[in-house]
Length: 399
Ligand SMILES: [Zn+2]
Image (cartoon, rainbow, N blue to C red):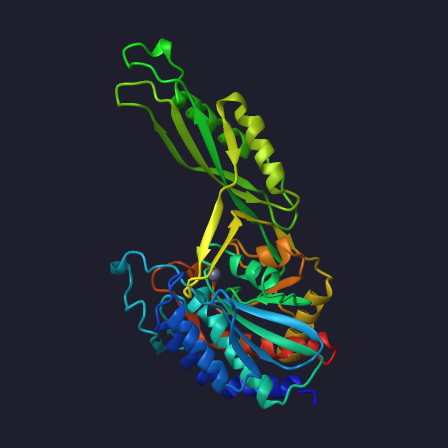
């Protein structure tokens, strides 16, 4: 049987307190990147209790929970690692209290993005309660290591585990708006080489300090030349670190390093970004390269990728955006706001690298992410859990 928007909405309301409790429970379990075992085990047991059809761990330690057995596949993703708490004196409550009060759940990860995870568990419970047996297998993925390296967990799922859904939804915070893209990013390491000489006779040497300084100023100029995309805006380049050293403090330095944070808009690839840096720095740069990230899951599994997170967006009239609009309209009687994230998500791997269409829809606000006194509205958990349960139905044309 195919559930109806009214029954989805009614169950989401009925499960309101359960969703808030679920979020509180998983916020009380700290889960910094690479240390997610306890929260993953808790989430797996919560999915089992909710009646999911299958719950398993992937090779990197993420939890993969499925509802439905249809031939089409959709994935709904939440990363369940969090950043640290920062300065504890900035928090008015314990970051791991999971306090539920005044319509909010409080604590590290409530917005970024265990609220999405709690709403996904609730959505699975709704679909099971309604006996969903439609055309989709709905994979709810609770993924690891995102805060360390966005998308790595999904490169692993696609490339090593062969999970290649037709559509994906990221549940990072969007304040329950429908998002369809964000800028990409990459990291670039520049090596600078000089010739050392005694500090009393600089004319005998070639200073890596002056070359590094010229190279850094060339980035300030390069940043002014980038062109905007009408939806995503402009890319940027930032010199995030400069190191210079030589044989002593009383010598012309012969080695330099610049680290660059490059945000990429539509049409800007890693190759383009590297060639722009090479051209702008000229002979001051000895090498311009993209470093790699070596990740290690809580279970000890290793996976590695280049520090390149490709830009992604999908058109406003894409069937996935249309399906999202229909789901929202059927549930709430109005159209969702459509937009984009400022930060980066796992969609860099899913859509940016592998071309699988993504949308974003999540409880909580992006500006609460990584901030002290992080919190999420319980109303958002209700809205998001109804949306995730409704989306497969809408995509099948039942909304
Ligand atoms: Zn996040």
